[in-house]
Image (cartoon, rainbow, N blue to C red; front, side, top):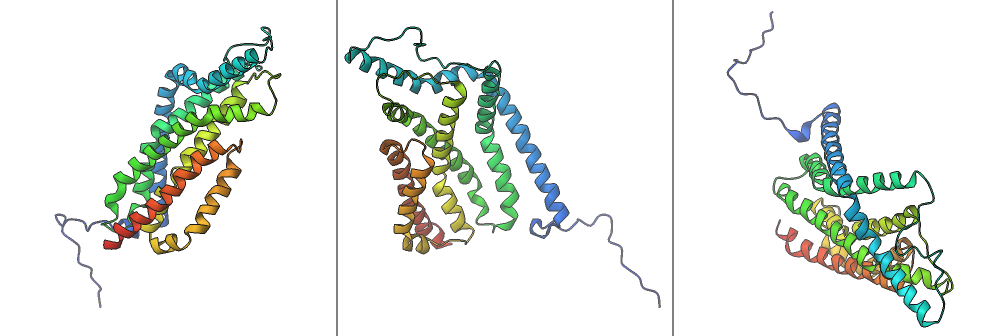
Length: 273
């Protein structure tokens, strides 16, 4: 008995491809494509950041300039003569011949990540989209925009409060000490603070996404509100290197508000779905 198979006509359209039914190899190929696109965006953003190095560095050094001015004023009020051999204004002191080159590359890389963040987040969202329902996929643009805007807002808040951080740290040494920072130490601390604030401001995006993915429910967030608030202050006290109350409150208060906003989003937006 011969077995025959009907051959589909050439003109028949192919059935639609189900992204959720992709094999492991297809998922890896999809991940590779997304990573390549994200890396191209980072390289292009880094090239743009390389050209903007000078104005960005001037803005990052402004907190140090403010601290130096306040320190010089306090020394004059105390009748302490400034040592002109050590006073370099608000310029950072380079002690390594390669440090100028490495600092420019680092700042360009950070700016490249910042400029490319919409593309990177978009590629991330497109990669996880097949696991979501159709009514959940429409949150792609709000997810990307809110993530970028909140991160930038957190980074600018860290830059705004950084003079208080420097003042708090320098106060332990007294007025007889003159602060001279190297680019690596100064920018390393500042960038760490900006990253900590930026990631902290992503708190509502993470909580909202976990509610969207059915991992958390707004009732659970409301039930554990007290523990979450204590955890926010404890974690922020650990990750902020200065430990000063101004920096701690500047990061903790917005995160507390974001926690409440996440509960409201889950209660009034996702409840209908």
